Image 1: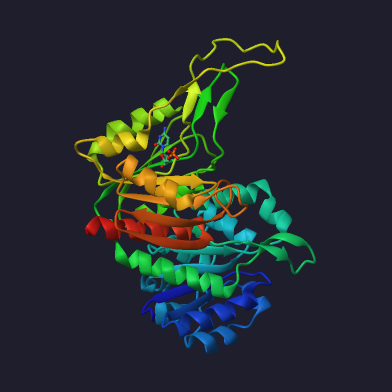
Image 2: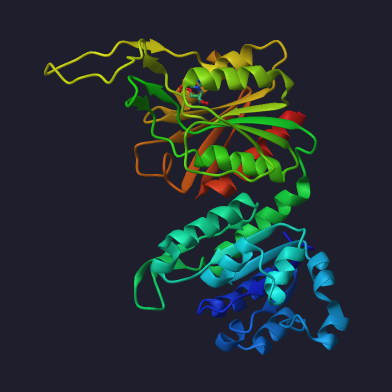
Length: 399
Ligand code: C5P
């Protein structure tokens, strides 16, 4: 597939800058037009000549250069781009972006850019793990930037851990998918309601029963729906994730609260995706005081919770309803059973308990079923997977 897109590649000063030469080559091979912006320190690692030769365009590096600004000023350069990818993105650059500093061409371009922005961080593992870097990354994610990697492995500094820039071929594949997806605007103007994360069912004021769920898949789906042009509401159980500012987030704790939040909004929605790991049972009695330990064994009486997904599907004015099924065996049989029993339009099933992804993992694979069909979505990052699932939902919705 040839892409007829304009990609602005920002390069900041890390040893991984040499990998970006390969990225330019791959993107151009796919038909993209590439322009390169380098920071001063990036040019200490690799010559702009390399990028000029590979991209076929002059390299931009200065903000306050009258000649360069006449050729293509920074605002025009930002307007020119269909997508901005910064690879490698150093800890320093990430800190600058997250604070809105604009003291060189690349950081100024980021502020001026209205197109989607993706960054591929690369740094020493301790720098990546540092609290301030984590906060900066969180903030950029909230601002709608897509973070690619970093990967785990050997580092130039001689250490091993998270911090290696993703491989050019993976970045290229991701960007192509993002561009294709961004182009589609398949859910433009539609309202999408998504539930995500676990619920907590209190036993007493300090203890609760819950499910293992990071909420990553639900948040990735909310992001993907937003990128596809939808108006997104996310009903979220307790997770440590943050959603972009333009998604309405309703925070809940218990299955009963999630039920109320979903059911009261569902009739207005075009699509409901139940990605939450809702507790199936909740303690029949919530003890008002902390339960004391006494006997060797004790009992907790549990009461079934309401099945939010099935109730949404039963509504007179129901959205296109999509469920999830996490199974340890007989995946297709159980998923298809849920599809018909809960009267869903679609179900996305995944294996759990096989060290294959799911739960807390960054990656997952899905087998998606609907009445007369199915599609397998191969193991990949949850963000990419979410975009593929949103594409599939949009396709089925049209039919
Ligand atoms: O039947 P099972 O719990 O395996 O079905 C999983 C699907 O049902 C998920 O989409 C989950 O969000 C949804 N569900 C729900 N309310 C419940 C239990 C599960 O919406 N009480």
